Length: 407
Image (cartoon, rainbow, N blue to C red; front, top):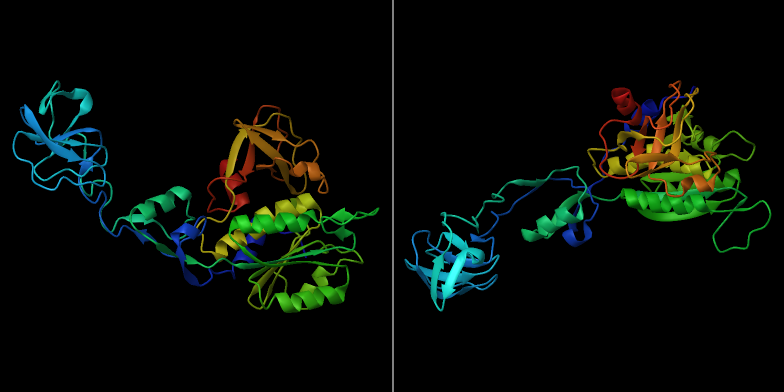
């Protein structure tokens, strides 16, 4: 099977993926969840006209006024205010009946209960009118958007207790390899700790997945078969790490071919992460990711993360491409698209010195993947480089479409 472009592999991978069923989620538990239906304001806001400043509520006109009471936030002045009367009011206090303006305390001159203004008073000044911020029915947050802490604060401020979201996809993690051992075990020569499972569990959760199982398999075909038979009946997405190449101990590809009429794809024109394999097994998507740590990380970001987002109904699935000055020079592009682990600090990119797919150090502090398209020109030090940001808002277009548009 020929090497596919990144975007074509994503197209094949995402074509059968659809959002999971809807559920009601308490706003206190909805951080990062993706809305299945837009949320509209159930009422106008502010609910009542209130003061934007500390001062005196009164009817605009010529003073003086007589102070007849007080209105603090949450404590109403319970009768109408007559002409040439004023009520001491504090920020957030509801304007009493008969008042239309606030004389801020900086412009107020008060002697006993007598009040005058040292500056012109404009009708409506320092008043938050009822419904001036939001009208009933206004769209607050759209379907397909993830909820942020500030979104939730706004919804809660309107009394909204629950939202409708697509349920979190059920994700199973399978790591493979006779040499891989769990953290906490005493390491023998030739063994490596299972960093890939740790990364995949955390990254899948961060993307919105619900981890239902994480297990490790030795390099035995029968073990892979048994695990896939069972887990594909329970999970929406299975992420396999390792065993996807063509060595004598790599069984993932053969196991997947035995369970589907045709693979979605196998091998992508990228470095690291070329031997990515994808298949649809019943209602479950199975992604086999290369076993080297950097390959696992990069291929998760490009392929697994968009699947998890799509299963939640997200409108934007892909990491967003930007450009920023690169501290070091970079050679011209080669046969495959390269994605270099890098750190963006104060608007400048620093590419890790070591870019081997097995280099754990290349994962430290990474918040950007510098994109070097195949056959691109060399880049001098200080010149702008394209990078996929591993933070911030996502993009609607896949990576190659983004860099073709920018470049």
